[in-house]
Length: 276
Image (cartoon, rainbow, N blue to C red; front, side):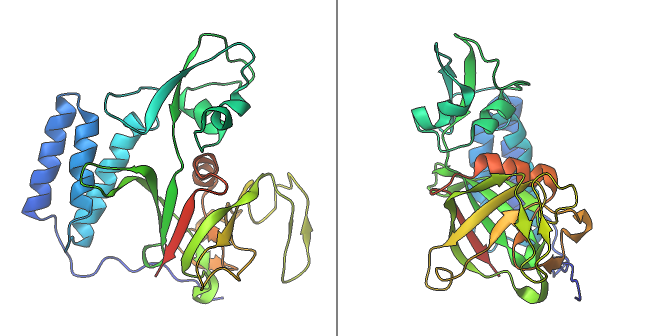
């Protein structure tokens, strides 16, 4: 099939003075060790009307940098409504903590945040950083980009942007637009897979499986998607296909990116919107 790559943003826009000033204000907050305020400043600007492509790219890049410190590090910052701490109790298992305290995330995300090598070796009294969840995603087909959002909102009432990931899409525009939710019991590590076109079977842990090591099944939730089946977010054994239309309609991601999305997206509560 003819593969296509996204066109560069049109118009040759540069960063506007207004956004440059916003970035400077955010940098001042960071210099004063107020990263949550910096995030709020940039997030508000991301929703401004008339934002050009270069401005938006810059804001997303700066917000992603802040997320590495505020969201994805072991640190918990004051006023960050997304993060809190949990003290390990006798009898706790890391795999059971998210559901028991209502976090709407995968336990592997707690393992990632706290740099835990072995999830079976948490200790009583250990303080863990946790994130509340659920997280949500918007897939922008024209940009071949998945944007990740928190369930919480910033001070202006807008959904809180976290970071973006590059994606691959369905050949000939076959990735369907619309609203979805992560299907209950729809997340699988090391899935088996049958090619729906050829019938070729791939067993679990097959290194040549085309969908990679993580599968996140999607369930349609609007009139355009509710009758569709078999769509999901997954990895790929063709990393060069990211940024191209080469899948059978699903959203492809690089292996480390889909692993993170697997930890962030919650079955039954995380939404995914696909837009042109």
